[in-house]
Length: 266
Figure 1 (cartoon, rainbow, N blue to C red):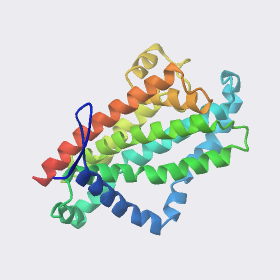
Figure 2 (tube, rainbow, N blue to C red; figure 1 turned 30 degrees about the vertical axis):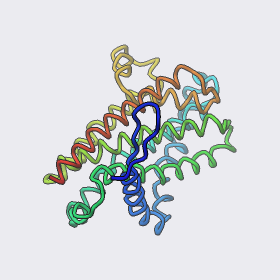
Figure 3 (cartoon, helix red, strand yellow; figure 1 turned 135 degrees about the horizontal axis):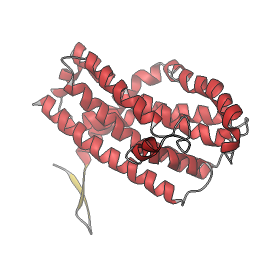
């Protein structure tokens, strides 16, 4: 095996793994590049939330948001886009199970880990495109764009999205013989995570048990970090906690997902 060894701490980067990840990611991106309208179609839901939910927040709770409702709500929409986009990626793997495409990939010399990591990284490309569109649309509407914070925020979403996408693939592998269970489990976890993150409505005025439950929700730390970053504050403790939540989610997701992928290939 050809490896690249870096002096100092024991750090070995498998060149074959990086190559395989690039191959899988490129393969998965080709349908998206051939059909860019799928990217625009994915924008319908976040734009609907911005157009309908944003004015309601502005009218009913406008005084709650010191920096303005859009400065509070646009980062939430970006997190929501990542959440919906990456949590449903396992459905693509279920389709490959049905068509036999996944089994054909298993007989190639590609690393089994790359089959998951490459797919998870691919999902971030359309999400970045959608995020850029959301920011571009909202900038003329009193949304104050801080480029440095926005770039860090998008990177943070990428780390979190890779972890969540890996969990989604692991779920698809676990329920591949009963694919309807994928949507049951995904929907069961998705909406409680959203509500308990304070993504759509502030939790400060909610009941005490919801505020306590939000402390155990990694998504709530990510939402706080994104709002802080998009307000231009890169060095806040909220950003640090969001980074920790994203890294832990990515580490756990990749661990569970890679193990599930290896078992599926056995």
